[in-house]
Image (tube, rainbow, N blue to C red; front, side):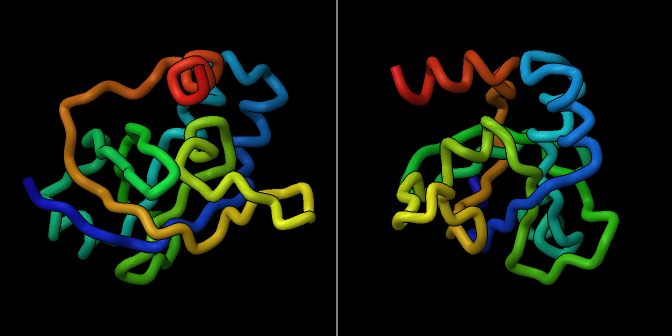
Length: 130
């Protein structure tokens, strides 16, 4: 199976914020926080189409997300996902005294998968930490 290493960037999005306001257990939050924006050339390297499931792995953990073509410019070798419970599983948990983990520049491996996205943030936490 093909794999691709990229730098993962994270940040806020309007949809993530809207989903958070309506509840972290809701569908709106899940949809906002499980979409992985990718460069079209990187998607082609993996044979991906919009809405294909991908496994993101880092030295901190792994999680399944949905690959989509980035609507805004995103360089090859970079991917973006909104802040949320799902991405927390694969970023460095150390805060280095700031109280906030580093959400920028995490090396991740992306590969196509048949696995399903975990349905809600509580399940993510249970599977990752219990």
